[in-house]
Structure formats: structure tokens, C-alpha cells
Amino acid sequence: MMNNRFLGAVLNPSAVWYVLEQQGGGLAQLGHQIYNAGLAIMNDPDAEDLEARDFPFVGKVYVDAGTDQSRMRVKSDKFWMYRQEYEAKDAEIKAIAKDRSLSLGEQAKRIDSIADKEFMVMDDAVKHWRELRKEKADAESDNDRMEADKIDDDMKQLIYETVDSLELKANGRK
Image (cartoon, rainbow, N blue to C red; front, side, top):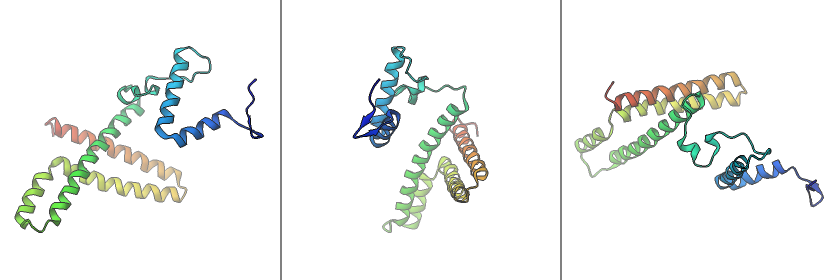
């Protein structure tokens, strides 16, 4: 039996590993994933049950389309991609609006060229998202778990509807 004592204290290997993962961030988690994948490949009885998404890098490209969790992850990733594009356009619009070297007509023309339909959909979605996030924070601070869960479901629905709307527009269907 292995001695789990260090400086007179009994150490739980799982607790030590957890602390290392938390302090090491993504690199430590990658090491843990590689370690578990190696154990699984060698049919070690201590290996954790693994799915394709648990292997390093595979989880980012592999999606089991049959699960709600996977579908939500895909929609969420797309939503944040659209949000990053929106934030970049929004910053550009704000910069144009502050540029006093441009006439009002030139500002309007440039802003109009940036504020396309996708931008407008995301503008509404981001405003609604911020409202929901604030409501959820309030519910959590009041320890109202049921309300927080309902708001979380509303946030997921917002993501689904926004991404679906943008994809339909991109495909020329709406």
C-alpha cells in the first residue's frame, strides 16, 4: 500500500490532483485527459469511463448530435461566435459615431453599411441576454434556485432562437 503522508498529513490523491488542475488551468486538464486516455487505451481498471469528447482536442470537433447537451454546446458556440462579430461591429460603429472629422451624412452611410440584419438581430439578442443575466444574478443572490433555473432555460431558448434565426437568414430562407 502506498503511503499518502506528506509532512505528517494524510493526502487524498484526488484532492491533490484537483488542486493541481485548478492551479494549472487548461494545461493541467490536458495532462489529466491524456493520462485518462492512456489508462483507457491500456484497459486499466482505474481508468474513468471515456467518451470521444473526453479525449484532448477530439471534444472540440466531435459532437454527438443525439444529445441535448451536445446540441446546446454547438448552438452556444455559434451564438458566441456571432456575439464576437457583433461586438467588433458595435465597437466600429461607436468609433465612427465619435469621429468628428466625418460629416453626419458620412457617419450615417458608414454605420448603415455595418449595421446589417445580422447585427440588428444580435443587438436585440445581446440586450435581452444582458437583461436575463441580471435577472438570473438577482435570483441567485435571493437564493431562488427555481427562478434562476427558469431564467437559465430562457437564456438557452434565446440562444437557440437567435442562432436559428441567423442561420435561416444566412441561408436566404427568412
